[in-house]
Length: 483
Ligand SMILES: CC(=O)N[C@H]1[C@@H](OP(=O)(O)OP(=O)(O)OC[C@H]2O[C@@H](n3ccc(=O)[nH]c3=O)[C@H](O)[C@@H]2O)O[C@H](CO)[C@@H](O)[C@@H]1O[C@H](C)C(=O)N[C@@H](C)C(=O)N[C@H](CCC(=O)O)C(=O)O
Ligand SMILES: Nc1ncnc2c1ncn2[C@@H]1O[C@H](COP(=O)(O)OP(=O)(O)OP(=O)(O)O)[C@@H](O)[C@H]1O
Ligand SMILES: N[C@H](CCC[C@H](N)C(=O)O)C(=O)O
Ligand SMILES: [Mg+2]
Figure: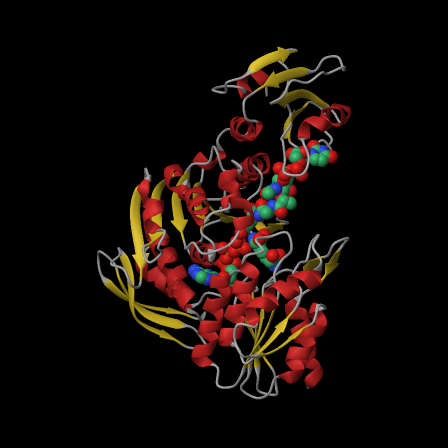
């Protein structure tokens, strides 16, 4: 595509070079090789992309988009200057791939917890209705049955537009995308037209990045300026912020607050949930084979979205009755000794409290919780999670999550501060495998062992390396060894 076509509707200064330059790819990382690439220099949190312009040119870039003045020695390079390269990257990528989000139904899900769960649940309902779906999220990116590795929950705009474009080429009808608060703040989804936007909830996380809950909420509220129909959890204390500047049609769901889609007569067992759904049209009985009060919230949002997408209610309810659980979300294992194990991705105070509250409702024996907190993430959530674990458990094993660049023992100590606020048996074991095995070896008949924080993850991020690590695998091996 010609550079001049790409720059349509974008404010820029041409610093030097040819505006009719051919562009064959849009990149933001100098290490990617191209032939006629357009390299965008982004000022990051760790390094400044402007430092890598020379490397990008050596790797084939012919056009460079910058924010700062730069000196380019190489011949034949076009330099474009703009105010904000992150915003312009999204605009250029949307132009380059010809607005792919307009060619399929894009459903964006935002909120602290429940995004991945909703993409999987809605995906299964659409697939049962013979639709070809795409998923963009934490566990994986998926086009029909083809699974692609996911680096982030929401990809950078250049990667996102490319992925949406491929989905259009592959005739995907609906793309279900998790939209993180980082994505809104860092302009990853600028240029996306969402048919539906869903807000799940907002509780403490990512304060290292957003600083205040108000900023965090406002980041997520941007979704309701980018979508046609907004589906909002009315029970959330942040619902009003989502609705405040919404430019879309707003629909609501909830349990405690009057809403368009409201659940009552809720029954929760170890096997799943049932409830009565009241919609503006009618009442329905809903049955879902996944436990937890959050399953009620997630399925209210899913039913409302599926209905707005034109699916018949009898299909939606039938499909929900037969849904498979989401990998690493309340994933259950039963030992022949009579205790059960849940592997779950709860990694926020609210997520942990929800899953423990659910366990409390059906556990006949003791509750043993193994968990830790990720490094290089909001450290104020650590003692709060410690307190929640201690409050609901009979025994707590504090261990490592993904320590990343931090000292794992320091993280364990920060969690311990909260655990100590309640009288509970606890130990600290840095090695997560040892911690899991310790917990399982202490479990007796009717006990429930919760292993929280890493869910589907099959790796552990240490200071200097990433190792293979899979909570479920360790549990499966241990239980088999007992037979
Ligand atoms: C805070 C954040 O999101 N940071 C992301 C951001 O980093 P950054 O902008 O600071 O980039 P940087 O590393 O300083 O580099 C600046 C620029 O120089 C470029 N560069 C760098 C080196 C080089 O040799 N050549 C080169 O061109 C980089 O490609 C980049 O364009 O852009 C990078 C490139 O895409 C990301 O890898 C990085 O994610 C970091 C690793 C991260 O951990 N992000 C997490 C917090 C995140 O985004 N999480 C949310 C999910 C949260 C949730 O689900 O709850 C997500 O959506 O995944
Ligand atoms: N609606 C919900 N409300 C509160 N907790 C939930 C909800 N749905 C799921 N959870 C809990 O939170 C954990 C994470 O769920 P899920 O992976 O769906 O969230 P997410 O929003 O995708 O998280 P991430 O920010 O990491 O992408 C689950 O393992 C479960 O314990
Ligand atoms: N999307 C979340 C996932 C956290 C998962 C947990 N295992 C960790 O590594 O902290 C984040 O990036 O903060
Ligand atoms: Mg997710």
